[in-house]
Image (cartoon, rainbow, N blue to C red; front, side, top):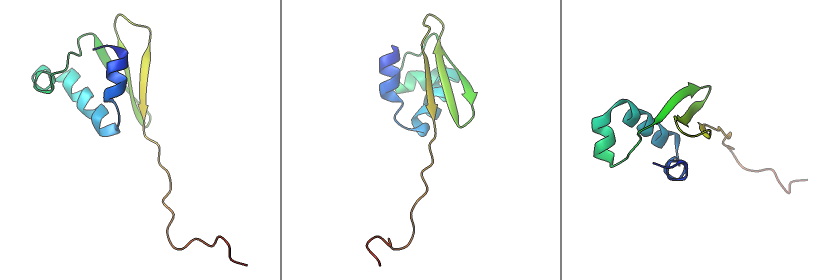
Length: 78
């Protein structure tokens, strides 16, 4: 799998977890139809970093938490 194909696949942290599992479990990788030969990963704070043995590029997938606003907005109040 090329770096661009992997990037397109990594749309959520859950999808990144599936890729991690597939790297560790060739049967799961085959079931997904992925070729992750040469790819490895390192868990990093709040995410995972994917690297390929033949490439210099690293792909980081991190979580970003955005606080949810609760209650009514006070915009426009005097």
